[in-house]
Amino acid sequence: MLLATRSLAALCLALAVPAQTFLVDAASGPGTNFTDLPPAIAAVPDGAILLVRPGSYGPIALNGKGLSILATAPGVVLAPGGTSIHVQNLSASQAFTLRGVRAQLGSVFVIALVLNCAGPVLFDGYEFTSNQTFSSVFSTGLRVQGSPQVVLRNCTIQARLALDAQSSAVTAESCELRGHDGFFVPHVGTYPGSGIQCSSSSIELSRCRVFGGAGVTMSTPLGPANTNPGPAILLYSSTARLSEDATSLYQAGQLTGGSPLAAIEGSQSAVVRSPQAVLFGSQGGAAVAASVSDTIRPLPSLRTITAPPGGTMVAEVTTPPGELVVLVFGAPMPPIAVPGFDGALWLDPTSVVLAAAGVPLAGQPLTTAAAVPPIASLVGQRFGWQALAWSPADGFRFGNPSIFAL
Image 1: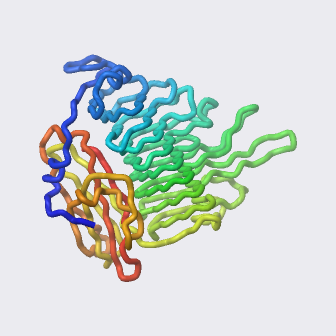
Image 2: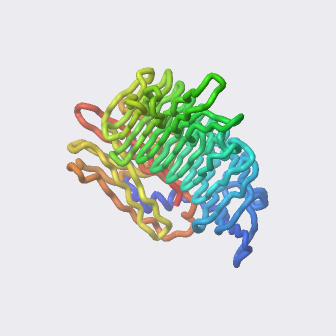
Image 3: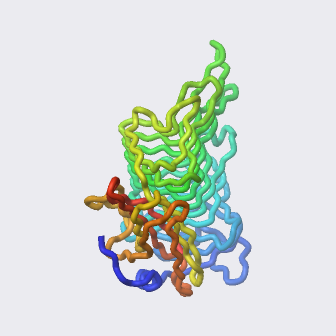
């Protein structure tokens, strides 16, 4: 892997691609270009940035167009309707960023859908928490299909399936993902959900809290019957890496008297998890089901705090004491395998710069801060951090990536 000598500030400026910026304001305040998202999305050019003031807006629907949709303050809400967010067919050179937006329950079961996007997709601060009513018991908060570089940061999603990944690569940092509890009233019912479900996919997680739904006792003509709880993560022909510290939590749903259930269930799948990851099964269930390959290995756990232009970014890496840790910064790309390294690299190796290196002591994570140049054209630009660790016992290991937009 190449480590360039340029500074982080110089790299930010070198990678910045000026984009046209437009203001969307439902209240039509000063400087407004559009009062709703659908006409703005239709009118602006590919790669534009939409700055959205607090208010209620129509759905986001993109087909083959890259955009950044950034809330200027809390309170940007997508009104109920059909699929609130539908992004599809992005080319490798197109990107989509959504930051600070809340979706509300509409009339369909998939609230946000990312479909066949070769380019990067970033959900930062996305929120969807449906209530437990008939119209929402089958809901999916975010479904990702056929997309190789999807990033979730600081997201809070509650649905029957909070995240459903199919034939995709996803990474999540500092997210809370909750599956619905089992639900049953006369003539209406659903089985408990999961925080994450993956099919033929890979997922990287750090500093996350993921919950399965609780089971339910139903009345049937033959007497009471139980539906078992949902696992925190359900894997089918997939891999999951948990680059976690002790703040994480992966917990299966509960049901008194139910059968034991692991926090992570699945088949033909593999889990690699740091020893610090916290996993709880249900009714004495295991951390990882016996049907899933389970490897416990020290992994660097990375958390970052971003900042706007003129501010200061902070990155923090936690590893076992005595390991050599290297932290790099660069442009994001789809994950690739690097010979001799465990895990995947999510940053373009031709762009990365060395941000920090050292051997952390117990209770002292490797921390670095970097100034963001005070250049307005950096707003909406995407960058990433990633750490790797080395020890004689475990060799080279990548930790989770941390991808963000300024």
